[in-house]
Image 1: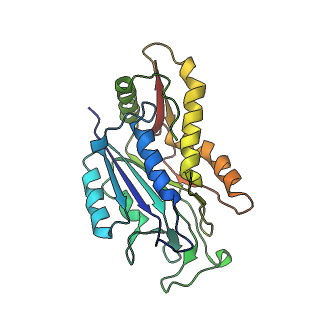
Image 2: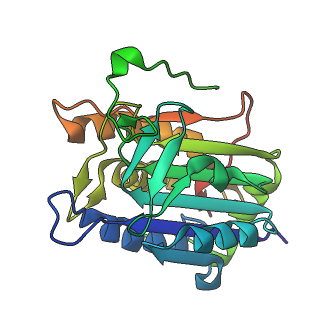
Length: 259
């Protein structure tokens, strides 16, 4: 039996501040609803850890809990930036506490990480860096469930995971130097686009699956489908999602359909 763990972290910022992001609460609600749905893999409530503005030590403890799972999902929605010296995304947690994105990759066998946060670049002294002087390289609302059986969908999701090799996929909502958009009704531009893309795929593929068969929609496919949606929502302000992934398939599932 495939064991799973998900960790969802949100940080809207300081209440009353101009950069307060009400939409992160929608991300949390929408993600939990989606994961629990048949097409999302029928995750159980005990498999999902949720944190709002946690301290860094608590998140590190949560990451250790994920280590025993065959597959884990980590999502961060909130404020962040890129540190110029390392190129790493720094996640802002509770007031005065931060976490390097690299710590989310620790002790992982099969893990997907989704980071929906801004990536303006700052040095260690907190000075904003212009992108021309920063060199960066990348290594490489839930809809109707269509009467799918949650038990069968969960089995299908686990089977899709079991066919994947060990590795980490990291999905970023924007490139360094850019900001991530937030909609206080629908959630972050990128996360909401991922969920919309998954639901569209389910609607388009449900009828083509024959009896006792299943079809997965990978995290990579969901990312590719979400990129133009994210850009459209951002309008004239550039927001370009990018991904780090193994060079070969299969990739971890984000959605499944079964009959």
